Structure formats: structure tokens, C-alpha cells
Picture 1 (tube, helix red, strand yellow):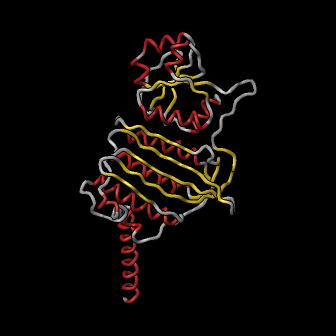
Picture 2 (tube, helix red, strand yellow):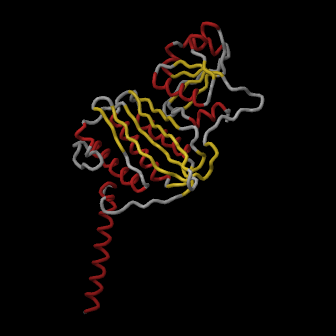
Picture 3 (tube, one colour):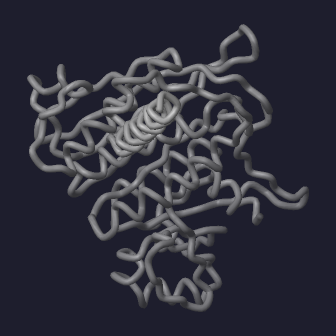
Length: 316
């Protein structure tokens, strides 16, 4: 009889442990982080490929909202780093999702700058996510990473939970997420962490054939944020830029004329004439949307940032 009771007790303990584990697994991640310390793993990863994947996820969330996704990535970002890619991606996605949630128009901008650290082949990566969303009242900023009842809507409570988890992870990596915001004008979140350099070669660079010169480009956009982002790329990679008005006035030709859906169809006849002149028209499009195919027009997928910009000009 004693063995029977002992057996039943063991079975009961196992069942109770299984039930608690099941309940714990179903808790939101923010709740689990309050009970356990996050673990980090280190492995080699390609940061620009990670950002390319993040961009597609963000465009899906943006959908048809008039919000421009801008990736402003330091051209000196190495090809490969060593760190916890999964956790870094999680933090970046959380900050970007939060920005997209609150931005109804304007832009969401991811900025990454890198600075060399002399010891142990490290670099310091400064990351900023800025938006033109609703912003936060000054009283809420102090509680934004810890409050559990900041919003009644589940969607916005999830955003607060994601920020709490992100802060835990960045602190584990030796950094701290900071925030500044102005109600009605948007917010900016930023942090700095160190990563080990595995491959110091540039992650994105324009590779021209020996017989190719540095290309000349022009641009005409319906979206000022899109134009500003492209001009930053031109400056970063020293691409010769000719304003569109001058291009038309003097009949000059360029290697690439970048435009977008709105500007192309607003002046469609003018654009088609340029196509007939064999100008290389490049229309920036959301890869997740259907787009009209026109002979002689090249579709370029957004977000247009250092990686796909260099691939495009290198004809890869």
C-alpha cells in the first residue's frame, strides 16, 4: 500500500510540474522575463542580411499606411559580426513595430552607426528608431519600460510589453534603451551595444567593372522622405547627382533615374518619353504589393538601403 501511495504522489508531482510548465509557457514573454533572466548566445551573423529580412516584415505591418520605411545604415558596417542575432533582431523588430503602430503618416527611420573599439576587435553599434507618430506625454516616458497598465487596448499593451522585454535584453548586452518623445510629434528610441567583428570587409560596397565609371543619377519622387533617403545614399557612396529639372532643361542623360509610383504616373507621358530615349527609369516599389510592369522600366524594391543599393549599382 505504501508503494502505491508513493507512486501516486510521484505521478501527482510530475503532473503538477507539467501543468505549471504549460502555464508558464503560455504567459506573455514580458511576464516570463519577470521570473527568469534572459540567456544570450553568440554566433556569427551577417547584419545587413538580417536588416533586409526585417525590412520585409516591417513593410507587411505598414501595409497601405502612408508611412515611409527608411533604413539609414552606416556604410562601414562589417560583413559579419558575432553576437546574439536572434535577440538583436527581436529588439529591433520590437522598436520598429512600436514605431509603425503609432505612426499614421510620415516615416519610421532606423539609423545604425558603427564606431571602432580598439580592444578585442570590437565595434560599438549605435541604433536609433525614430518615427513621426503620436508621441508620448512627458509623464509617461518615465514608466514606459515598466508600466503594465499604460494602455487599455491590447495592441498597445503588447507594445509596452515588447519595450519592457527589449530593455531587459539590451541591459543583458551591456546597454540601455533611452527614449525622447514629444506628444503629437513622434518618438525616438536609441541604444548602443558592442559586437565582435568576425569579417571586417564592408557588408555593402559598390563593385564596378574595370571599364565602368562611377554612375550618374537623377531622381523625381512624390514622397519627400523617400527622396531624402536616396540623396543620403548618393552622398554616402559619392554618386554624381543631376537634379531632374536640369536633366529636362538641357537634355542630359544619366545612368539611372530613380522615381516612385506616384511621381511616375503623375507625369506618365513625360516618363514614357524618357523610356523611349533609353533612360534607365528605376521605380521604387513595395515588394509586397502588385505593380504594373512597363517595358524599359526597372522595378527596385524598398526599403532601398546600403545593401540593395550597392547590389543594384554593381549589377549583381
